[in-house]
Amino acid sequence: MTSDTSDPTIRSHASELKTRRHRTSTKPGADIFSATALHTTVHFGTWQIYSTDSALTDGQHIVLVKGSVEYGRAVPCRVASSCITSLALDSAECDCREQMIEAMSTIHKVGKGVLIYLDQEGRGHGLTTKIRALANKNIGMDTFAAVEALGVPADIRVYDDVPKILNDLRVASISLLANNPDKASALRDVGIDVIEVRPISVVPNVHARLHQEAKRLRGHTV
Ligand SMILES: [Zn+2]
Image (cartoon, rainbow, N blue to C red; front, side, top):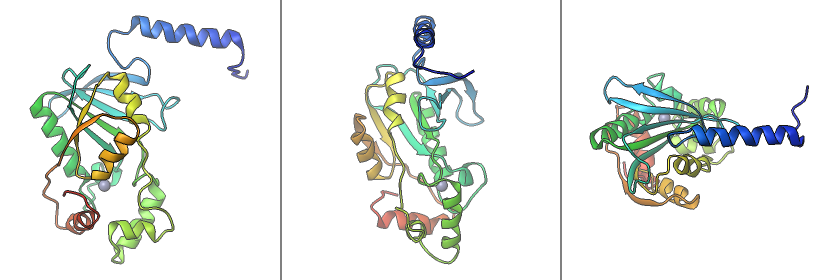
């Protein structure tokens, strides 16, 4: 059996399902999210966790929400891209884990905020390019040159799904937790109202200092 969305019967059923989801939904996030639950952390309390519907977003993103953010202005928000080597595998090559912990800590202290963890590993290139770039770093290249030596741009991350996520959560505007000024510009370019940018202060491990220095040279406020 094929699924043919040009079939009016199927289209009508899909439309009815969507209407029903709207009608029965008591909280934001009925459209773009495929699942939600409470997520209790060791250090930063309990959050609402969502996964996005990969049929509607580019990959399956994770969104953590703390407190009431609906119709909120200047809601503290961290937009991070996947870094499994740091967050899951204890990598000393970058400071993603430290930044994530600091962002979660800040939102936990404020009692309100959104953390968006985008499904785009290694500045958007994927795991294979990331590990090839790591091989270049092993021989002394900085974090940006290591990628560029592979013949691809240093950064191809996209933020097109962020407005969909924030719209579904009905967040009006954000206070962006970030050290990268380009990220604020990229988010504004896709229509996000970034009221301010709040730097994240982290103490990097000894290995990540070179990574931070390379970022500083590229204009990051690390
Ligand atoms: Zn990282």
